Image (cartoon, rainbow, N blue to C red; front, side, top):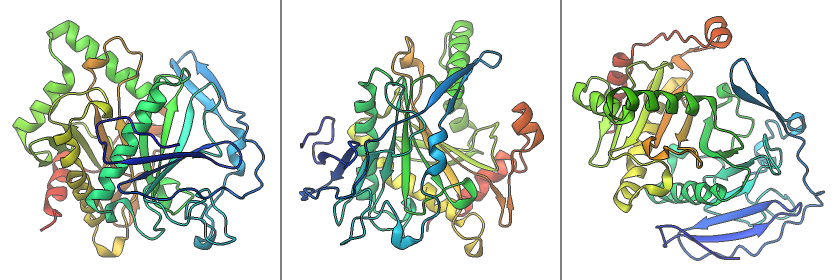
Length: 356
């Protein structure tokens, strides 16, 4: 089935099913034949996820015991995210693809309680997101946007988080360049805290806290990493992580669907530049920088969702070429972060490693 809803009509979307009934969606910038059929003898997928509420902390905890059997550090010639090749069958039945999204075989949430998807950024096993072309990065943005729109229509989804874990140090178990999309059946604790702070600030001052913080960073300038007519990236004043960058569109919008064509056109160059700077932070001998990158979007059912500001947060747990930031007693036990790098120093370093 072919369909596309959204601003970017130049994207071709092909939807099909895997052998166990999970949905698979291909995204292409030109015409492609995705008629290959999943030949694996897979049983129908079942999810044993459970969600419990911690009344003391006011947050939800998911349990997904079935994930213990998920694929763990397979050799490259057995990668489940590479295209199918001959008798080597993978999650992608076709022998090539540009961007592919499919329902996670081992989801943290599922059924009528949310949804988890995998986003394959490219069929090339050896590259990273930073190695993509701007055209391909724009296609990934289109996929993120479309999945946000599609998941918003599911009754069990309240919020969507598109994110990438990169590097074994982060805990990544598949080396192929990919990310994930979580359709949470609840509003996450981080978002709830943000929205509560924004609501209280509006009540107290009449202003929008997101807008004022972005304006303050732009005016101060010492923590700004880069800015363009439509985007600004900065290390926040109270960054938690050694190197942490927040990327905002110049105007406040609640989620990816509300970005206009100019903002979409400018995003790939900005984001790729940030990722490439992260890889240069610690010098060529340190190897690729491990990071987490994710889009913060407004919950779909929030009464004041227009107050929320879409933004991407990118951070690394690496604090120097040979040291990682571990969340030990204070951070893990009490949620009280202590960082080893001043935000102003982090921003200066990220400006220093800019592309020439």
